[in-house]
Amino acid sequence: MARQSEIKPAATTWAEIDLSAFKHNFLSVKKHARGAEIIPVIKANAYGHGAAVLARFLTRIPGVKNVCVVRTGEGVELRKAGIKELNIIVLGGFIAEETADIIKYRLEPSVFTPEEIAWLNKAAQKAGVTIAVHLKVNTGMNRLGIKPAEAPLFFEFLSRMPNLKLKSVYTHFAKADGASPEFTMNQAGAFEAVRAMTPRGVMFHAAASSAIARYGSVLYDGVRPGIALYGSASDAFTIKKLGLRPVMSLKARVMNVIELKPGDEVSYGGLYRAKKKERIAIIAAGYGDGFRRELTNRWSVIINGRKCPVAGRICMDMTPVRVDAGVSIGDTALIFGSDGKNRLPVEEMAKKCGTISYEIFTGITERVKRIYVNGKN
Image 1: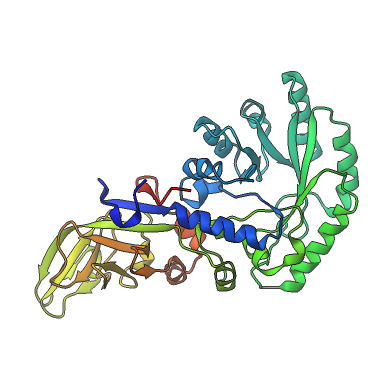
Image 2: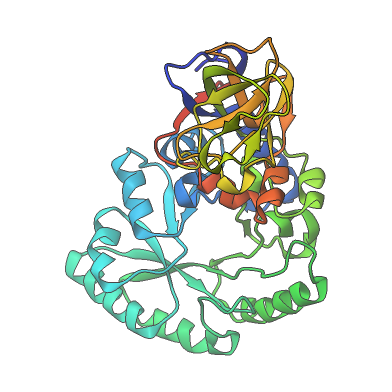
């Protein structure tokens, strides 16, 4: 894999994925996890970064045994991509029609209803296999999971399922980004009450990225970092505390340069009008790539080390930006991330869009080529 400064791809729009930054973030999380097992979350195509490539990279990092996805289909895709060494935990539950794939591809589903436990055990018996399962506990997020008070009943029920093995019990914090420490501690208290009655040998995990940075008392046996591995977080404290480095940089080529005279309008709706003689560069990225339409006239890219403001409506496939005389067709525009010398934080882009970096990353579409750099361990 090439180094970042050497990249000259045969593509007009691409996302550079810096594997050295990814590894740095992993090791930083590990340092703060105080010995807890690191269970990387690579759902949603590793937050848009490429799940198969990053899963394969994780197999080269000592100590990584388990990864998390949310959909059964995501686990199937990883197995089909040749990821055999890692246990794949499915956090989002499953439906009966997915049971065959869970067995065939050796996935480890979350469970939280008696019905799914019963039919999964029956299918496992028929196939002659034992399936590892993970019991989700709802301590306050109110999406999935059993109530803490139901834990003894579920432990007893699972003990009567000969073809299921309870591997872990876990929960998820709703406000770990600092919004309400009291709420987080209340969740932790409810979870620890479950821990006191959990059978021996079962892993306990709760903390995701922000909780790893903020709450040392909830690290337990394992932690599930997601967004932190990709160099971002929902709060600035976590980014600073963990010393995170951005992993993805979105870039595009300049496809054309146009000379405008005063009064000329640019792109759909004429939302930008030249006040004098100006130059407009058309870059090969638009909302069809994940460069969001809300950023029309509200964002700047960097070309040749200089900020170039968006000048007119962001289109599906291209975006006009105002440039100086030094910009030519074929130059590279940095949309967010880093080019080695300059940075455009994805968190700032997300703020302008009224969202979070998670949505920006996962919104980078399939047609944007992922190019992996700095990949040597």
